[in-house]
Image (cartoon, rainbow over all chains, first blue to last red; front, side, top):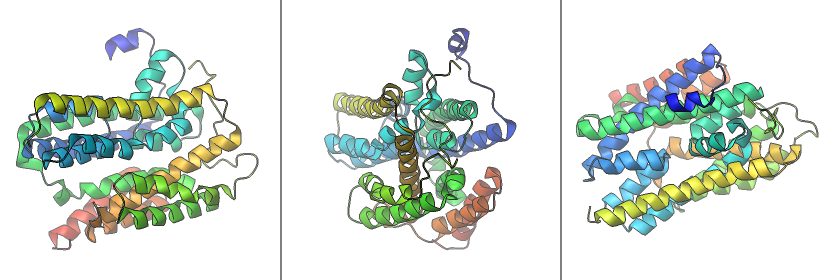
Length: 247
Length: 108
């Protein structure tokens, strides 16, 4: 971090409420990281496996899936394929919030790795370009640190915390995303499109492997775009293509 | 676990490289192409739709099976609070609290 700061790699200031919200999400994800580390070591993996994965993959759902498949004796190629399928949604996320990374090779290279569900959702929840960027970076860096710390600690203390279910943490992740998306969902057609997409995904989820249902939810995209006025009415799209700011 | 160390490392590296490739493809396309306002709007809508689909599947399912009532109940209460513009702290505490409470009372 310090060397990054020295090269003038500054994160724009963050409003207090937003900082608190991001801190909260970091705390929740630390607990999920704890359970990932614990589950991986309980499945018989040495500590370096969950630790390495969390740094280089940094995408929770695909990590859980990989550990579950390989841990139960499954084919590692199938585990990689399943993980990549689950992570395919990051490509359209990049198209949607890529402007929040800012300009310059370092920002683009590092920022791309920090693109996850939470950082994308935080960026989507902000309309002002500077806040959008600040939210993305604070969430990305904060979660990278907390997630990895949580995983290592979870792997070390092992089965002590395997059951984050008792704390209801499995409900926290969807609730956080829902809260961040609530402003966007107030737009009538976006809301309708999202609900239809969710029903489509649930229908497919019963039969198809993880990852695909979420992509198939995009079948409802034309519905969500129906109400789109020619000039953005400011749901979450206040930023046009924005990589001209030398933030 | 029956896999060797080398294959394990290779598998993790391939997953990491592929995942980074997906991420960088999106962000690079975004910076290279001049997306029209309409396309940009479509990308935002697409992300919202996928995230809501993720919320739905993560709330209701464990793998291919129903996750039980406790989790969706917690998410629903959190969602209701979010809709009423409650702060995120309240949303998260309510969601986790309701789910944990229901489980405490034996609701799965």
